[in-house]
Length: 148
Image (cartoon, rainbow, N blue to C red; front, side):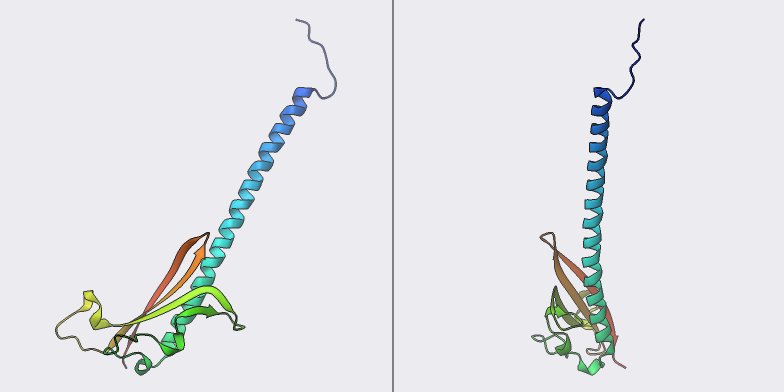
């Protein structure tokens, strides 16, 4: 066999190099896009959780008597935590929507007992809703407040 000794880069070497570099750059771009998407999604979820925790902390600071009465079926909302878009620290509305619900513990199906005393314990649920990539997402937190 007679092989010719060539010096320098051949056309096949350049073609393979371009193909490998293109594949490598494509993988890097895809990975960076996916990482950025997940970071933004996690950030939105963390912000919604922050607003839910702040609302629960406000509920914990309320006096039990400030909560709606059991007989008030129509208005089971907390006046200081009205349903609507949450406002941030500077008072600007955010895209996060808060709803609160107060239920007497005797009205929860699992807790309905014949001897249960109304207006002794209440379950307060805070829901923060937001959109993420055209999907509706919710964060739900609950706390039980007991009459002292």
